[in-house]
View 1 (cartoon, helix red, strand yellow):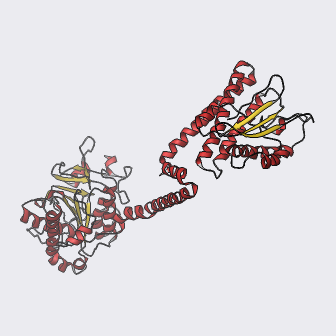
View 2 (cartoon, helix red, strand yellow):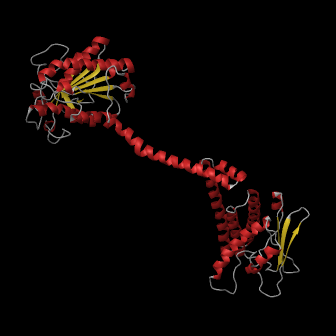
View 3 (cartoon, one colour):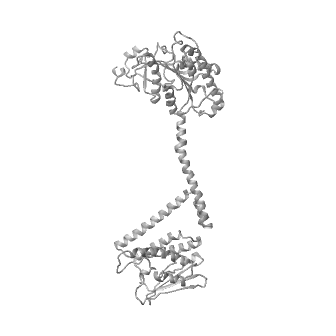
Length: 538
């Protein structure tokens, strides 16, 4: 502990440092210690102070700080009077030749080593000096942590410095409280906010320690086995954080992009009866299933098939299965027509397989077919209805093929009709030519009359417009508004204001009344432009 004591008869101060084995005894003692002058310090250490004492360690810490400050001051301009960096610094010593310094080392009755230094200094210490002394001992606290000493010695030195700071801060505050000057008020505010800031930093540091893995364990190891052993565990913790960072990079830049893009870029193959392919696929039992069936000359690599699969997969509300029967569809039309029942049978067997292995409900099946694919959907539904006596939930026919189905007329399960599913919706875009014109579902939509589409100069363009309408409805389910009329001519003559309308496309459902519906579109995406349609002119 450190304390200044003055003699009233002789203007001298006696300071001493004692080191006791009991830590509480250190706090109760009110001793003080003064650093000898720089020029006599080395001689005094060699002749009078034992090198293994704790007091020498503490004085060495204070001396190191004073030396740094003294070297800085020597570079400045000399002044007649300067503030001492510490009440124990040689700067406060008188320069007269009559000054005397007496120092001795002795052993107390309890066996503790003590250093006693007597010198003549000013009887009072200014506020600025007290400020500097407090800062000096705070630096001692910081330097003690970096010294290669055992924990017991460090704790003793820390207690000495803390006791000095606590005692002199209290004395300084009492002195400032008695003085009402503006400078003293500012000094009190400075001390108050400084303490608050230090306490806040300490609390934040304690909180952060809770988030540092094994921080308390490492400190406990250091206190028992030293910093060398603790450094090994610090290295292990550093490796732990390196692994965490590497894992985060892999997850963010490898795993997440791969998983997010896999649904769109990579398709799983499913074959009826192959359990291994089904188990390794991303098939989700909790979602309904939609099967996309292309038409004649097309395949899974056809652009509109890939676009439709990607657009519907982005919604993440269905299992999307593309039925690839390109090996048959890319033959002569008549040959494909003859073999189409085989395709419908395989599609029906796949649905039954999913129902048996994964519990797929038949009512959760939605078949979307274009041209001959719409007729294949009807054949698959007929097989399911025959085996389970249940109907699939929905069939959407995108301009169902007419050649060899509607003309010549075929009355069988090979032609789509409203009996094939719980809800059958049909979009007619090239009737009387490549597509069917007669109503064949619960709800039949006839955009622009159902035969020729705006901007199309040949049949195939109008035939493919049904696919484009379906794709547009995926992006905007309520884009197309259809009205119930008996014919296209009645629609053109009628007044649409205040009439109920129903959505055409993906948003259509069984709540729409059975019948035929008409609407007008334009020749460019998104196919609805209110300024040019006939609807606004009515």
